[in-house]
Image (cartoon, rainbow, N blue to C red; front, side):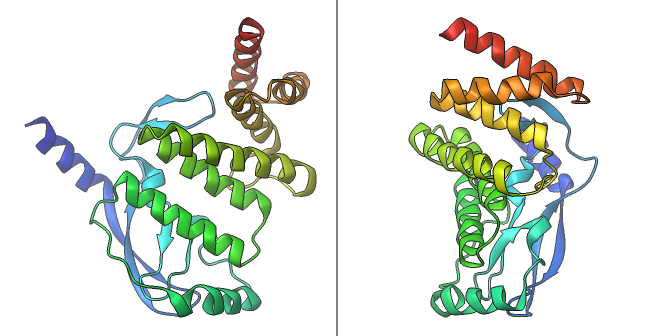
Length: 229
């Protein structure tokens, strides 16, 4: 009975949205999470939010079933003419269409995000975008309890966000600079980069005007590191 109730809640939390691929101009539909149908129930220390009904990350990577172009929802339509040419030449020409389940599984979510990462690399997307996608993949591997791959993609996200903080303007996908620094500190701690984590935490904690939510998390992480070393 519980599974039936959950399945019904999942169906009610999603709807089909139409998209026009900016690369091949063909239309397709994809499941999208309805606003207000999904509540946050907990947040991991690196800001991975857990939801009551459905993980929005599973539906945040769009893959065109016709040409293989993929991207996160917010970036899907943002392609320059030259980038479209690169996608067509390096992805679409060798793309073998793949069918997905009606409701995206964790494994399918990983695959869609890897397609998005491939497209991002192919279009020479910004480092921050690549890092953000890699972080999503790491979180999905966390849910799959695949620690090796989780750590591998956390390292990729860590390196990407560290570089982006030095070379790119924030916010990146809604993440402001101080939040990114906190995330880098937490991910660095998870990866054993303790001195770097302390450096970023010091900046976050002493930054004027930072949100109380992030400052409290930064202080908690500082305390955790002090008791761990």
